[in-house]
Image 1 (cartoon, one colour):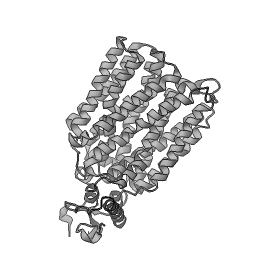
Image 2 (spheres, rainbow, N blue to C red):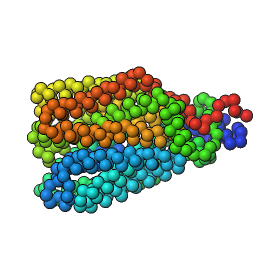
Image 3 (tube, rainbow, N blue to C red):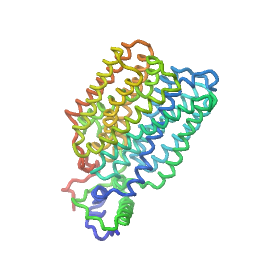
Image 4 (cartoon, rainbow, N blue to C red):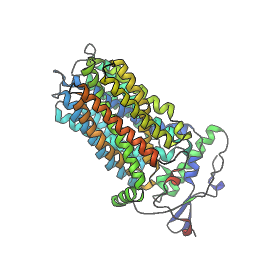
Length: 497
């Protein structure tokens, strides 16, 4: 079993207010184990909930607007106003909970944010009028936005550097597992032979609550990030988390772990950072990283929020697909989206971040331009349009997932959650709020030229973001987080005593 006495790099006190720790190196050298699977299941599966939630609302827009649904709302209100309100809630929640995550810890907040999501989703099922539905969607988004900041920072700080890329991509891509489940679920729940008009859509929200409760139970056993602990003056707790992980891995493998290599890092205990310090760190100290993050998030947020909230409208408007059957097509797209990160994720750790992110962004943009041209010439059917979008999003999904990975890796630990929140909020405010409003306005007009324009806008943004990555992207593969961006509390070697 791991023995603290056998390492010369355990947390120690080289000078007043300064600690030396090899916790990052010890976490990065751990082989994959059940301990890591518990983290992935407890934290990563929440994106399944997000995918389920968004898809259900998008596919049920027509049913909610029907007479007898039990709620006074129109299809346009669901696909535009409710979509924008959900994203606005997510942006607000990301900033609020992201700030708290860096101050209070990853674990406290990823428990709170999931609880907020569960409560809001459950209450949504009781909606009877548009304003209450909008309120519930805002609070649901508020919880999901907090999840993005708390979860991505915790996962990247607990997963070994050599596999951080593929794990992060697959976890973020699991959104589409939820989307597929939601698509198939709506097929049954929209069937009035099975469920009344005012019952099926309410049960759909209940599905998310049940799944969320299971995740909440698993999440209780996920530890706090040792990296966060040692930068907040809680070195003994950080040490204990790592020792328990090492012991669990050794019991599973039946052999001792190799010693951690490299010099320990020195950390000076400090009070929590103010918002102004975090903003200065993100913008002034890392301007190129800031430009990169904004480009990646704006491109993927516009494309994905537009497609998620508008594809059913395209199918019904241009291909006369019955509202109750749009779920079949969306399920195919969802599978393609998940397969992208699943099959390409390993390459982000081997070929490298920069070529893979640039390639997936530009590649998806080029394919979307081609899809727009085919659509304009009237040669696509509902099936072939879906096939084109599946190819586009196979690449785009891997790139979009890598956007979260990128901003989590290239900023200091003390500002990691807030950085994720900042880029998610700005990118989503640009692409996630304007995207559904603009996209739905164009595709709902019934004019082919308007829909082609919507496709080309999304393609141009993705292509531009890929070119930015090619120019100023960071080669972060297989590198420790601390080597990519030193903690703000790090002490330089001359201060050693």
